[in-house]
Image (cartoon, rainbow, N blue to C red; front, side, top):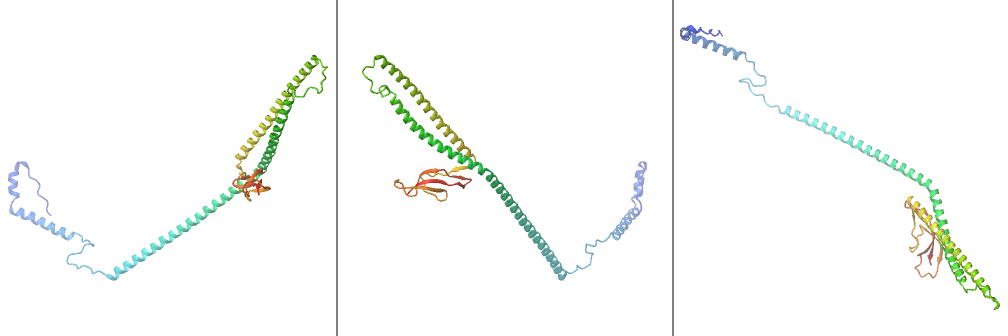
Length: 285
């Protein structure tokens, strides 16, 4: 294609325009443009994916299409089997892990139970000693209460005997005793009454202190036993239980139903829900 004519100079624009628009010039320009279009059409590449003009479409091969679908199905089956196998393997791994965790938990529980039993065995002698001390103090406390009652009764009798005219004067005083002698006897009786009253009060205070000390010691031991989870077995008024009680005596004519516990001779205990010592009781026959 020829080059475009160079622009004319502004001073001779009207003269050049008339010279350039001649029919021969216009035909030359159109010829050049037509030639350029033909060259462009001939040089344009043909797209391989697009069907060329006049070329017939290729027919569909069903055998090839079926083969592709079969291959796709086979691939899907293989993928499904692989996924299923992986899932089964994961499930088996989780099952084994769960069994391992369960076994570890059982081992830990067994170890904890062993340590607990070992600690209980170490505590058992101490608790047995405390129970024996409690029994001894209980017996001593009951004896102290009984002695206190007897001594109080005896002191009451002594005080009554020490009253004026109660017989502390020498019996069979003759009428020849003078008034001075009677006064001396009265003063001596007064001193005796005072001394006996003081002795009786001191004895009463001592016995009361002794009983109080026994009671405080028993309460202290009971709190210690409760801290170690040693629970006493309730017996009195309850039916006889051969699994936690021992019969030391059967009482007849008590008016209570047969088999009912009337008295607790020795206290029994449970420790952590298990029997620690049998209770010794008296039951109605």
